[in-house]
Amino acid sequence: MISVIVPLYNEEEVIEESYRRLTAVMQSLNEDYELILINDGSRDRTASLAAALCEKDRHVRLICFSRNFGHQIAITAGMDYAAGDAVVIIDADLQDPPELIPKMVEKWREGYHVVYGKRTRRQGETIFKKVTAKLFYRFLKRMTQVDIPTDTGDFRLIDRKVCDAMKKLGERNRYVRGLVSWVGFKQYALEYVRDERFAGETKYPLKKMLKLAMDGISSFSYKPLKLATLVGFVLSGLSFLYLLIVLIQKLCGFAMVRGWASILAVQLFFNGVMLIMLGIIGSYIGRIYEEAKGRPLYIVQEEIGFEDR
Image 1 (cartoon, helix red, strand yellow):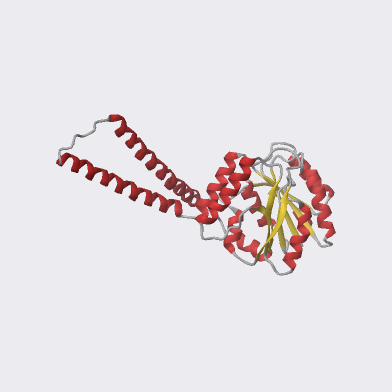
Image 2: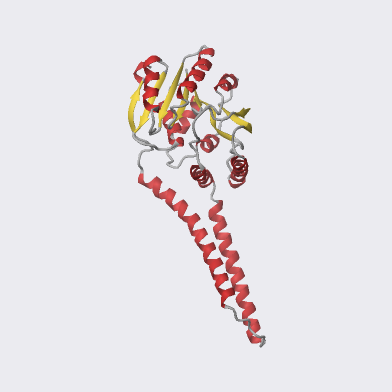
């Protein structure tokens, strides 16, 4: 069996077309399959439309969260419920073409445990998003020792072994594509052109993209903390050097330049740097606090279609 995980958040405009294309692709494989739809607290008709799909198709299953827990958590829930020997993760917006799944399955049958989609071009996206995404992936690669592939999203196929390994990871602030790289196994990059969104609006505005980026960096790298220490030593050294210069000038009888504005500017600069460093440290402490609470990753309000397995 092949399980296909489809996170949903306010996707009433695309869910039926997504179901149609996914079903056509999976039926062409001539293999048993299931479509696991995760309704991540949608506020439109997504839940009712998904439930209707479950009624007419025994291959469709639905998990409804009690509220919005986030895209990465929805993917995690799908992996928890998936029963397939292979698990495909794909968004409902059809930017990642379902027609690529047979090629992923082919590579999986050749012996690869992870087959991830690598974007060669991103259609329908702003220049700002393309540039910032490109810079982030390369920055993340330099920041961590984990080999996280560049220009990739969550669109991928993972083997049952990988899925079981992922289920053992209980992190709250999850960066799924990084965790898949962390668990290892034999991986293959399948290149493709990412299409425009079929309909609706993106569910990853700038605020959520920044949070995902922070999750990726803080989950796999301690270098920001090391940077805080390095900056502290450098600034302390410069301050001590400046103090020596002032003492030498005083002892040698040189006229001292008086200027409260310059002194204030220097103080503001150093205080700003200190606050930035404290913010970096605070973000790591906040992650420790979230992990220490031990709350479940998600709460399921309703399950439909799983009794037909």
